Length: 77
Image 1 (cartoon, one colour):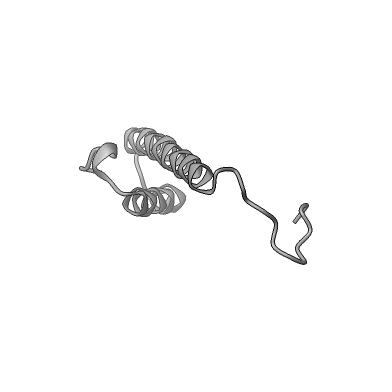
Image 2 (cartoon, one colour):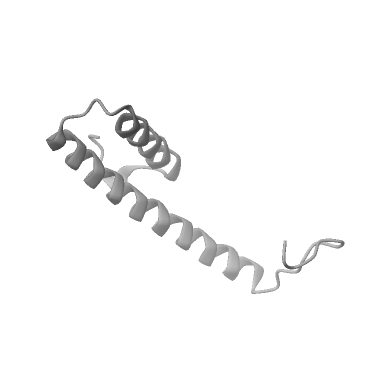
């Protein structure tokens, strides 16, 4: 948990988040460690959501909102 959220790639942040989930599911953390780990996980979640939102906006700009459904694929899928 040493890196700041701004210096991590999306993949690094997701890997750390997965590690945090595993630690918390293991149930071996003290209350204080659980709270600190939960707080770090919340930061990482927000950071990953921000990166995904930015990527989505970039794709939208690159495609100039011209995304079309694939042939033979219903729009509700």
